[in-house]
Length: 203
Image: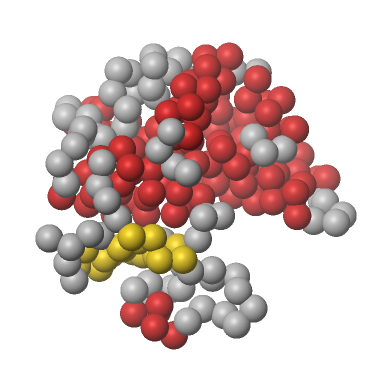
């Protein structure tokens, strides 16, 4: 069986989620660099892998997928290694709720409205950052209740942890993100645990 191929760029939050999933499962894979923001644009061949030109995309023995959640769930089911989804329906529902919440409400506010705005704009939009922090505060409250013990859903590390870690990892690149996370001590302790774990897997 051939090693799976992941298409994307190191800077991408969602490529990182897919990479972390593969690493947690112990799956060897090939990362094909692809910068969708490159000056020359998105290569035409890549649209066969992702019709909307986003990253990541995934291929395994001729089987192609796009959308991060589809990729990570496939990896969890198709390969040996520790299960990354709860066995019980309620646990899986909670995991899916966290991932859906992060995608719908946290990613934009934490990554683009706060971190990217602060890090990459010569004249950051302070009002946008303030609104982003307000939304981020709500997302962190959701992640903190109940308190991680040691992971977001209890004793088992799940796809919800990997999803949250990638987004929060970008958020805490800026002072505002660090300060807001510090207001949630249990979640900050969770971040330290998963940050250390991921640092040993992603180089």
